[in-house]
Image 1 (cartoon, rainbow, N blue to C red):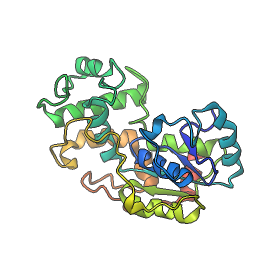
Image 2 (image 1 turned 45 degrees about the horizontal axis):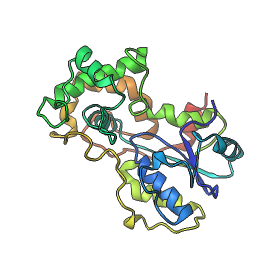
Image 3 (image 1 turned 120 degrees about the horizontal axis):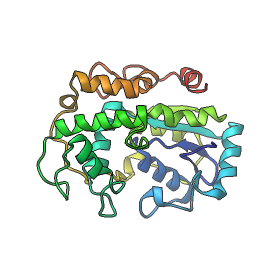
Image 4 (image 1 turned 180 degrees about the horizontal axis):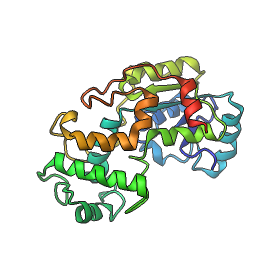
Length: 272
């Protein structure tokens, strides 16, 4: 299996396990800048140089050696499961992607047909019942994750624990897991622990939110999207995420973590 979704600076100063919808564009750009002194011109996910990525054949032996040796500082970043799945819905389901098309081609028409979801028309700008459509999307999400129907689960809404675990199962270990909700403090703790070629001033880092503006604006508070059934579905899908990364399942309106992440617990529970 190796180390899918793993990025590393070319200087081998730091290893990062990408978790989709958890500030990965910004983190990748910070890593790129720390080695190269400039930001990548474009979406960092498209970069094929200036950084090691598991998706690049030439990078795989270098990443594998570093991760297995556990000598390179290794981290990841996580996000509240409620806000993460909402963001996935507005970006990937309702939004038009950078290429001017719908995400994954025929997926949105399938959702409209099978689940009765509305997405705001052809351009995603029309009015629709966001709450009703999101709750139907949750049913689809659960179906893909539990039964792999009508398609395999997508990386943007599959559980964070699943992404995080691949590095552990294959012999790696995290030195740091921090929260998107406390991004600057978390990212600074990584930068303080490593040696970089080019110092990074987090206050001066531009926004690299690639999903911003793709889809319609969220019209309601987070908690309005989750009734009892929705919360039940979210817990069914993401119970390990709430447990391991210390988020508040009982209150969808509280996006902040309620306790510290226990790295030993994460490795013990994800390493089997």
